[in-house]
Image (cartoon, rainbow, N blue to C red):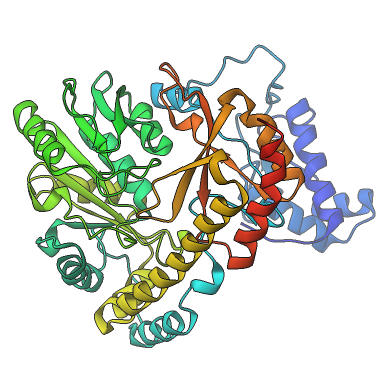
Length: 473
């Protein structure tokens, strides 16, 4: 397409288009010569030539050697305005289900302390190690730039295979690993490959909202199952095509799925032929409990293991992975190919460097200590500032806790959130994570993420909340 910057040329183009749509120029009509048009407009012939060239490139005009351009066919009628009787554009069932899902309001981070879960501190990112890795893989690239393997960079899958065995006890082949653009893409692939419209899926209640949305958008029908201090309640699991669980650290309440219930869940999957999607979203963080073996290690054929680097490196990198049963790997690879061809290669290869040289595991050990210190300060501040007013849940693992306000009705959450934000503190309620058609918690509860805050911000945030919450009782 011809490029131009002349404002006069733009006006000429717009005027000719308007004349064509209005019928002043009919298909097959010849336009004036560049000399004549330039004289009428008081422009240079070069400007008119540029305008004609742009209109030819857009298909409005047809050029013939040695002759004036003519108007192309099919351009005489004006494009109808949206207000005219134009039929609505068709949306698929998938699009309609998407639009029916609730969408959270966008909010700017609070100024003093924002307890948003999922954010990490920029100070924790291993800048030097990452920069060295990026520089090395950039120098190693050949002159030819090409598309990568949709399954993921071989170097990253090989390095990740070893890491998962060392860190989580998972034995798998590199062919079972699918690199995805964040765990959310992995969940979307699971939804589209495992669910047909009308299929039921089991989901924890409360549970991860974006997982529920991914399965619902695919046409799945939610079968919420309550959780308690031992995790998902497996005594009465309904028939379903799949079950989404967070057994190592239930989101958001923080319980660990007991050994008895793990066996019961796997037996249910065997009996029904269902697939279990195990989201180990923050498996690197254990504070007061020993590491819990993933479900995948107990039944690799029934479980898809979902992992992410968003809680250890950065959510902005959009790097995650699936460990799928060998029988499902080909379908996931082809779906990944159609979705985005492949996850960006430079980031994959840099991460492979970090894993191979041990820098990633050193980083994880470092931020585990850092976040353990943040957690300790948060728990101490809650105890000192709020005391018996608050009940804390899910503090043994992960990067957040849930704070329940005793004798404060859940209906007061919006007012508390607004007052806290006015004081510079960001709060996020638990209640939206419950099944909208089922019972909600009676007491107000909030997810307090602390991985993005320094110690002073944690203390200040809770200190600012104390008088606001005391006034709610």
